[in-house]
Length: 386
View 1 (cartoon, rainbow, N blue to C red):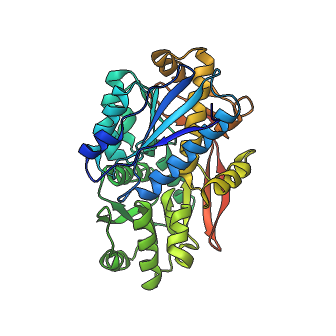
View 2: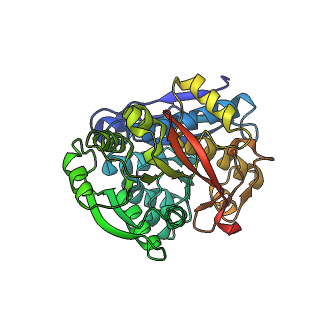
View 3: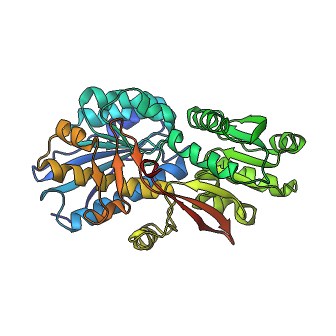
């Protein structure tokens, strides 16, 4: 048997075509099937591609090392086209195909409409979304691979509260489930700080022209900008800010300093500060090797989504090994309240605890873009260590 069993099923332009492409051949008893439901085209391309490549690197490593409880992982990859309706249909097809677990989607909007399918089928679902609402529905089969907005934004607010040069703030967000959730979370977190929000700017998913938004931002005379948009939009915003001479702090959560954003924005990204749950620059054992292995496999540096996909597979592996058998319900139950040590399970890269809702708790980082690279400027402890 090949060390790495990988079948890729490209989707055609519509779900109907996808229904044909997702037919999976019969699987030997010594394999365990997972499905990757990813944004590989459309506005989520960067996020979904990173997540997918992270998953595939972990699968390759695990299979080369003998698999999980002796079984090789067989994975299929399909493209949601960043469309929630297509995502839901593809998750249903994966469940119908008797997969053991689903990885993805990454976009909160697609997760919100598709995770009920895995819940009904009692299939563990590892998602890349950070929207707070994902784990507030009582779904016992959805598990994050990153911190939730509810956990991340208080850390950002505390950082802003410590900056005495920032008394007023403009908030710019993308008007989708992801962006609105982040906006609501940061506004709530800032209420206990000295920072006053003086402008609230909504932008569209896939927006190309940010000139009017930046004009509005400058007219607010805010001391700093908090930005919460998707990767491509963040890069366009940074370029427009530089074009219009914005010279005040640019602060965000994860995406504003993402690797793809840095590549797309070029020098305009320098100086941006972000709280990130995951970064290849993190001073933790194993992260540097992961970054090098990911780059060697895919030809580009991973962002946080690549780390999410990679560590998510190792979380599943740790839970299956704890249960000692391939029982979906038992594995999902074991994940709740589970602490996974990076010393015992190096693939998770950092110690992580999963709570009863599927949210994670672990260290996180403050980074600043310096000379086109993320530089870690602070390590923040897990929330449980406050």
